[in-house]
Image (tube, rainbow, N blue to C red):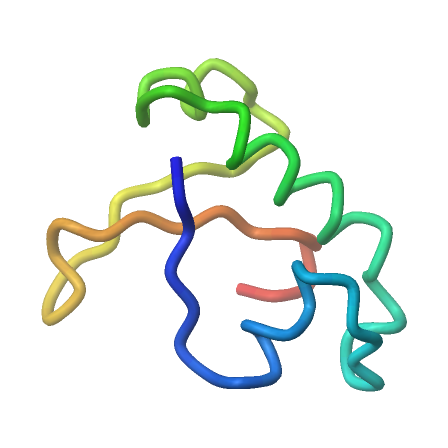
Length: 73
């Protein structure tokens, strides 16, 4: 699956550029990106409970979320 990014900082991160704000969770973020790139469909992402994969509601209906760290709710 190909993730979409909301801002320029987040777009720069997967191509290897260092983003100061992401240093605290950089390793976890790269791991999640690898999982996203390897997944062929959303069901594959649902199989791993550690992804904390969930459907969004409201204005974001039809979109999905994967949390990198537990303290970001």
